[in-house]
Image (cartoon, rainbow, N blue to C red):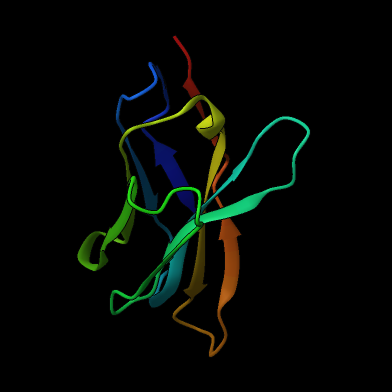
Length: 119
């Protein structure tokens, strides 16, 4: 349902762009977001964006990461600039999706992709 791409190894100060495309039976997508989980730590919200555009960021990434979405493509992006070693984690896409035959939204997760920041 959610397919992520853009994983990679990058040096400190570098950039990466993550993408996540939703597919399947979709009537409407509400909030889409990115979470991450580093080894030994809990999964945490990185950034989220609503259908109309308002965004929310973790304090640790404000000013460095930008979340955006293309509603026509059911895709959410995460542009990550000035990456730091502490950004190393598995990044997960998340979305609230309403199928055509339901009045309710269900929560979906991507499989997770590895982002490693190291020199």
